[in-house]
Length: 429
Ligand SMILES: NC(=O)c1ccc[n+]([C@@H]2O[C@H](COP(=O)([O-])OP(=O)(O)OC[C@H]3O[C@@H](n4cnc5c(N)ncnc54)[C@H](O)[C@@H]3O)[C@@H](O)[C@H]2O)c1
Image (cartoon, rainbow, N blue to C red; front, side):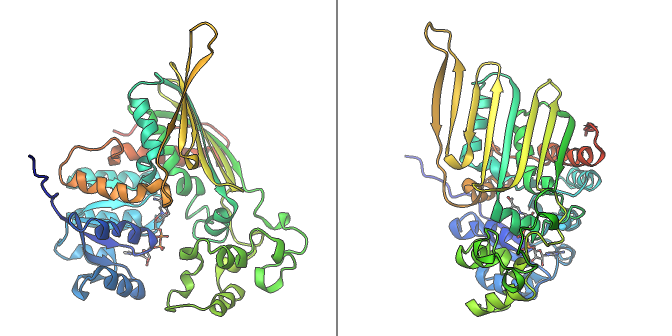
């Protein structure tokens, strides 16, 4: 009888202690034999103190920034970097130089120049940098990728995909929230770098060459405000009771998006209902009317990508949908795959030459768990640790070289949309 050897235990530092880093850190609780969180870094003293308690990290292993951490002799195998989008490159460069392998949140970088600086640092240091392309780990996409790799539908010649962001998600992140300004966080890069990565993943080995894109902000702007709308839901709005975007409805009654909406109350241990209402009435940015914010990211954008073999992929992002979902339709030379991630199944159809038959149809059910990204978040951490232990990469493993093409599409798409022209994608060697 074979005895199963315990996997080598690795240590990591959590950097940027928002909800993303803490979500990944939770892997250490589920698999203490594989991962221990031994250090923390964040300029916010409350987050640092709270997370130190949760993960039982001593004060001498708590730092005020990634940069300060990187100045100390390295004391862990890896860093899990959950800082905000704009800090990904400046915080990851010193961590790689200090010798940490890094699991980095998406998007990798806001522009091609910074992206390439990170790629060069990875090559110089020989460290592993894995990007949190969590959808590769969602069973729905992993199963589709497996079928494509097995050649079931032949060579892919056309891809149509969409991400429909719900009205309340659009409001909390891209109208009232942290990703509302194009100059800091363009929405296609922030929201769809996953989807653009999936396009490149389906087409592994074939590079994207040209991109065109159109999009606009048409709804979440002052001239579209319904009669009676105010500037803050709970202060001067006459239609709050019937408005789907009401801050009271979204963040109190429905209890949605608490980790964003109540960030300004993090200093209170147990905020009361009155604390929350007062905050929405006064200085909480999530109490603002969705038609009277300072948002300028588009609320819909479509991207057309041409690959080197002539395959064309179209991805559409739309914000404000009643039902959030991601859809995909791949057409290959021998068949097609179609599905909606949230429904937990996809269909494979193939032309059928038998008399009286038009096509065969196979329905594939995949396990959809309730957690974010189809359960991909923690599977990604597990895969990162496997790669660090030197085990064979999984189907979903993404190297930095793999991950950059989805981002290059996003940069090119925004340039195309703003300049009204087709943009070529540079070859990165
Ligand atoms: N993979 C996904 O699907 C997914 C989903 C949501 C968000 N994200 C990404 O996750 C990232 C984090 O999002 P969040 O909402 O958890 O962010 P957050 O703002 O809540 O947390 C970021 C933390 O980084 C800290 N920080 C700032 N500068 C730092 C520095 N120099 N060194 C160390 N820490 C520093 C901040 O104090 C803050 O606590 C973002 O880039 C976001 O786009 C990814």
